[in-house]
Amino acid sequence: MFPIQRPRRLRYSALLRDLVRETQLSKDDLVYPLFVHEKAAPEPIPAMPGQVRHTVPSLVDACKETAARGVKAVLLFGIPDRKDPAGSEAYAENGIVQRAVRAIKDAQVQVQVITDVCMCEYTSHGHCGEIANGDVANDPSLKLICRTALSQAKAGADVVAPSDMMDGRVGAIRRTLDDAGFGHVPILSYAAKYASAFYGPFREAAGSAPQFGDRRSYQMDPANAREAVKEALLDVEEGADIVMVKPALAYLDVIRDVKQATRVPVAAYNVSGEYAMIEFAAKAGVIDRERVIRETLTSIKRAGADLILTYHALEAAAWIS
Ligand code: PBG
Image (cartoon, rainbow, N blue to C red; front, side):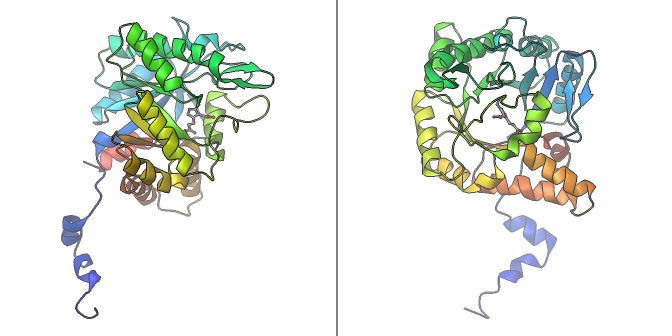
């Protein structure tokens, strides 16, 4: 081989490196997650520096900024004032997410609005469904989840994204939407969602930490990759249009496996803990923040993600084409 093969030949000049680069980030891939609450003013989220809990008006502004920067979609999380065991604010006609979606659509902002379909921000116990015998009861929870997805679609959501990890929820949501005349609304399923410690800052932001136990009886074991493929294939069979792997960084192999096993777009969620690690390390002055963000997003794309959900979306959109 050597000295015939000299891989460095292609690295000496920036122009040549551009020419042979295998992975390009694109603004078209990014989705920006946003939080909306019912308080009178926006509130910064200490665990996620740079992110805020919006009011409906400040959320509409954030969506306008998202569109202005060329980012095509937002993912909405609602934080209700009132929680109860059945999470009824998740599917209330005038719930916070429903009002927020209507406001974005009324303002005719050019973004796709993806709504997170889950119960944990809305239940007093903080779990992603209805509790029976000390655990989340799968089939009864499907009713609540379907009601939530339908009420979001009625409010104008462009895509619904179930993140609860109950068995059979994609099929149940698909039937519910179809029966109600929302057959055109796609489902982005959190197909392989792991029981991860990387959600810590999000749970502080959304006040959604479980009040007892943990989520290991419904979210996946971080040790399993083949099971992620099984989950993704099941979701596609049930009608998922896009499948997601979450978190992203500790699961790049899973993104790759799901990409190879399916024929639908694959999304990856660069979650709150991954965001916080970059932000706090940058604050401590130990990393070059912008380069680390770029490298992180590039790695997720290189692994095979077609869509990347990231709290760095707006900022990254400013540097990429
Ligand atoms: C559940 C949900 C969670 C996240 C998105 N949807 C938290 C959880 O499962 O506890 C986490 C997102 C993040 O950490 O950025 N509704």
